[in-house]
Each structure stands twice: as structure tokens, then as C-alpha cells.
Length: 267
Image (cartoon, rainbow, N blue to C red; front, side, top):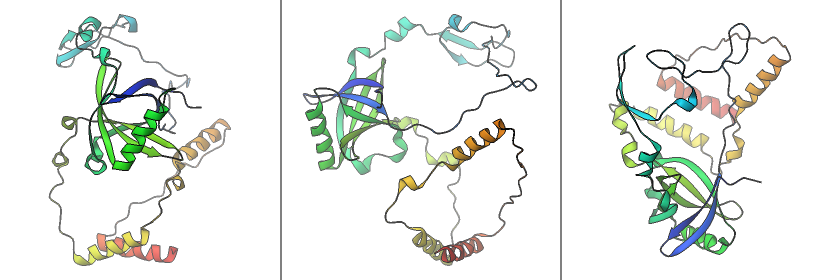
């Protein structure tokens, strides 16, 4: 049974919906540790003064902001921010998720979405929860809301979600000024393609097009192989670490032609 991260409520108009928020996904990646080069014992990090290199206990550290960076070996300029000062701007008294507006599902930029959470009804809120889920689905809209939690307010989207039962998703959103403009990438000057290349690329898209996408068909094979690698190392097995792969040197037209031929044979 999933464990709720938080219990809160969604408000729109005078309607209040008590809810529970759950993690929607988790990474299957394996994390590594830093080891001593000879003993292979795990190492640990020490907190030290960046200038004097003197150790500092974690409980003795203060919270602050460096507003002017110092050169190597020299002091920068920092200010301390205390808990009392943070309390003066805290919005902890306004806990909850307050819907501000409803928008079309297509109007939310894909880059705005950060992280998703499952949402379920809290005891006593089942009918109001079902009403909100139903109206969002019926109107094909999502709600834009402000979620105040742990003294901070973040921007979120609330959308309907169906997986056998009526549900809701909450998605953390970036604010518009947090999304970088694409022209920072520096690849705006694209090259024109020949019509033959466009046609061949279109054929490749049609050959690979799938009308019924099955998300479960994609597995994290790297994680599985990594687990096997760890098990083999524990068992003392010798591994072949040679790598004979070489990068392709075909031009665009030849690569498209070869791709079409490969997929024709596979079909």
C-alpha cells in the first residue's frame, strides 16, 4: 500500500476537497559509493571552511547566501539568513492547494512540467474528489493552482487521471522565468534538407509509427544489466571489458537509405 507524502486539501470557489498526495514514480537507477582506492572502504565527506580548510560540525553550520564570490583562497561576501527571518516571509498559515484558473489541456507548455504526484481522496472527501476529477475530464481542462506547503508556495497543475478508477494528478510547474529560451542553445541556424531526404525520413517515420503505444514494452535494460554486473562481481566472475564499437561515418542520405532497408527486412 502506498504511503501518503502529505495530507492537504484542494479549494475551488467555496468547495474544499480533502486529499492525500503520493509519489507517482521512482527511479530504478542504482547509486554508487565512493571507495578508498586501496582498502575499498566507503569514504565520507567532511564539511570544511572553504578558505581555512578547518573542519566544521554540521550542527554548527549556519544558513546563508554568498552574494559576492571570492577568488581562490580568499573570502567571498556572504550574509546569514536566520529561521526567524525566513518566518517573516513564510506562507505557512495558508496551507493547501488553491485553484486559480482552468485552462485547456493543450495550453500548458510541456517544458513547464517538473514532477508528478498521484492524488487520492482523504476520508470524507470521496464525493468532492470524484466531482473535481469528473468535471476536469468532462471539460477537457486542467487546473492551475498554488500549493502552499512547508512554508513555501509553488505553482502546480491538477489534471484528471484514469487507471481503472477516477483519479487526479498534481504536477509541479516551473515559473515562466525559470524556463530558458531555446535560442540559448545556439543551433537556430538550421540547414535546408533536400526533398529526397525529407521523403525518405517520412517513409521511416511511417514504418516505425505505432497506433497503439504500449509504454510497458520499454524496460530499463541498463538497470537490469547493472544488477547482473554487481552480482557477477560479488561472485568473483571475470568480466570482458573490451569495447569494439566504432561510430558510424555514413552521411545523412546513406543513413536514411540503410535505415529503410533495415526496417523492411525486419518487417
